[in-house]
Length: 129
Image (cartoon, rainbow, N blue to C red; front, side, top):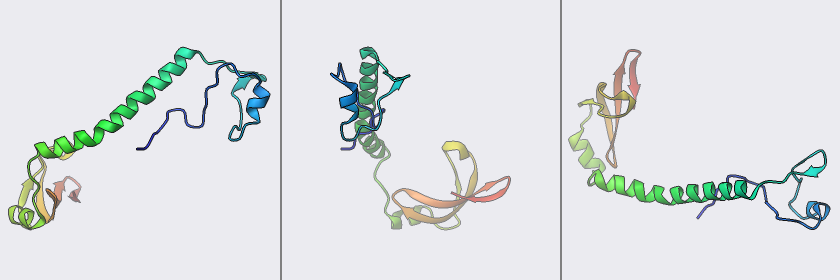
């Protein structure tokens, strides 16, 4: 598991005995402050940062499950040979999704895993997709 904190390199310390002692700790390069006075951060702001990190972690943990679910909804994957049988070279295709939706072109090769390489016709000529 990987964690990606929102506030990389920051530690929040409640009521330290001495900011000078804290600044001597290994890994501490500076203490945030203004005019030599340490900056106090509200506990609610720290809780908001923690909540945002937790929400992002939860979202990261769900991404693989969503991808697998999406792949399962798409149906079984074609092998490269099956894809080449369904989409032979120079076969005419029309894109049915994304920003190229409705544009036509020709199959260059079937690469397997339900993907093909195609040359799509645009106003500027053929574009590999």
